[in-house]
Each structure stands twice: as C-alpha cells, then as structure tokens.
Image 1 (tube, rainbow, N blue to C red):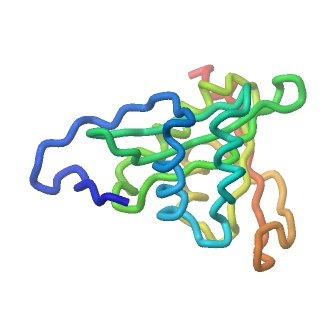
Image 2: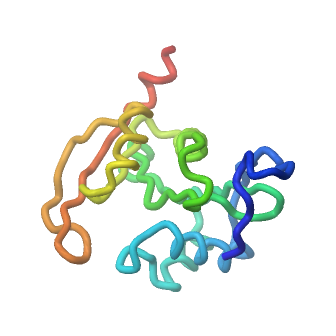
Image 3: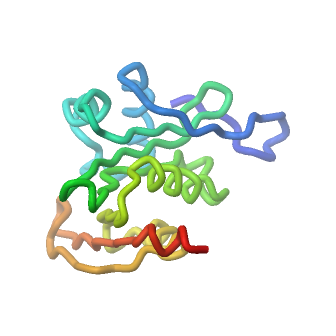
Length: 165
C-alpha cells in the first residue's frame, strides 16, 4: 500500500472525503484490509468481491488525494430494523484523527436503520473505545467467535437516540 503522509506531515493534504465504494475499489480495499486487520481476519478475495457487488450493501470509502484511507461495509437485517456493520477500518497511519468516527457516522446514516450492530474482537480496545464514544453499548459476547478462539463482542446503537439531540 502506498504510504500517503498523514495530516501534519509537512505537505498540504486534502480533507478526506467519504464516497460510495464500487468494484473498481477492490485492489485498494484489499490493501486496506491487510493493513488494518490481523491476517486471520482479512476477508478472502471472494468475500471482498461480494461486498463490492452485492445489491443492497452499504459500502463507503474514505479517500484523500486519491488514496483510500478507510472502508466501511454494512447491510440491513430484520426488514430494515437492524443494520450490521460488517467491516470498518482506517489505515494505521491515519488512525487517531477522528476519521473512524466520521466513517462510522456516515455508515449509520447510509444504513438508515433504527438499530446498528457490529462485532469486534475483545482485544481491540481502540475500536471498542471508538464504539463506546459513538454511543454503542455491548449487548452480547460470542465465545470463540474469531479464528484462534477469541471472543467477539456485539455492540449496538439506537440511532433514534442520537437523532433526538
């Protein structure tokens, strides 16, 4: 993956934009997956391809100066009552700048469901902090959910509560 300088690295950079992702983003999405997630959590190629072509999927990319910095995918369940974020990641060089929160909020809006859920590794404390700061609460633990036996924590947000403010 190219190493685009993060903000404040001595050159002018464009404000990252959130756009819809498509099949033409497959190579960039694959690079981002490999940079953001442990090897055992990186989607197989066919799954990345499916996410980028399946009708009804929410797929967003965050880009700056033509480089993909972040990606989010999600889908509706239960007749549009629950949205699931199946993946979200910000390239490591750009983490810690609020971009994950921006991408997460854009994904919630794009899903448009009253409830949004996601699953995260129990050891991913940085992501858990982001989700809690964004109004999510843990509703369930799935024992041994991830490869290697690590638990998955299911978080949920009632988007109707955040719209009331």
